[in-house]
Image 1 (cartoon, rainbow, N blue to C red):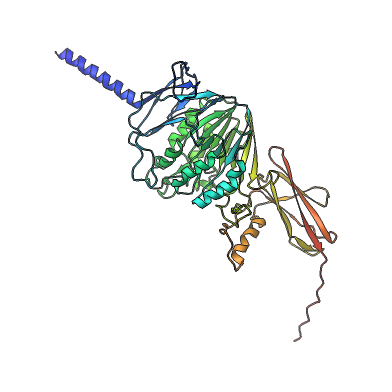
Image 2: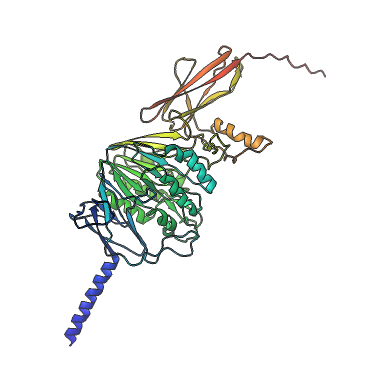
Length: 537
């Protein structure tokens, strides 16, 4: 009897263990969806060596396309798209590449709703892919901070940005670098509808204005984002480029408990580490997140998190980071003094924003704010061209020709030969002070301009009327200027003949592209004034 009892207890224990395993592990198949119906049919084969993740662990499918992953009560299981395959898209052109497992759903006391209860873990979580031709040369479209706070600003986003790129050709996909909206998360569906108009597959990441602020743990700050977009941390491949998308907004601030701080949780960096194990070393690794890695002595970004990220990338010679958040445009280069381990610096493109200076400024002929950013960069978007593991970035100013890459500022008229502090300023939007910028007057020889880090006077000229006019201007006052990282200066020649003179400015970017801009100014005869009367005592 005792033996039978032991056998029963042992059998029950095994059954309980098996049940527990089934409930704590996700199983499924990544398969070739031949008829594109979103479910695995009997004749459809599994795909081997495809990466699947739970947000921390990353496993490869076996020869039959099968995978197993541990799950908790708050996990998103997702497939990491391999090159040469396409993911199914929803009606908004967003990838359907994930399954959310939240048996009890998101907390119910959130201002903006999260994920509804998903119930028990399904027996199978399958992911269907379709074969697609992916050239190793391709282009993507990059948006920084659409960040509409209201329906009116969403209209501005559509008119100034979306309308320009609707139906664009020869672009593989787009990505928005966070702050999809401005705190009002009920605008997420309107943003998705706007993006869907473009007609491209689109990836999104979370910014500090896409968060649930009424939570006490960083892991819960993305509940509404997950409900609207899926995982906040994920990866995918295209050609010879591996993209890693990360939420790098820590909320609440782990140091103070108030506000937010740039950085990563340990589980996020564990995901990066586990994921990179399956990425060939000769591929380009592109990281996309919202807050730039530039930590300013740790005040805005946790230096230790950046260091671990740099450590994980040590064996990858081809890397690029994309960020936004600042509403300026900057090229950051990290070297060994910054903890980067390679001779070639790590490049971070801190992209200009589609909302520019938060939709401020006077209204233009389209009825949208000029929205010039505080460093003098016009609002707009970027194109990145990839060629195997190499890349080239070009910025596109909203409402302007593609050749508009430099803005020139100078006085319109100066006195001939008159002592003057007048200068020519050139704002090269995609530039940095390692680039060559030169000028020529009236076709004379090209001479170098001097890099300066100061406020762009062209931006100040836009700003001053708001504080000096005695009438109201349409629109909203721009924010105060800040030093520009891509500004050059030279004294304005005044010792030329009376009349009109042409200024030309030439700038060459990091990819060998040379751009030019021109402008004119006038030299007028200097008036003579009588000497002031001698004072008599």
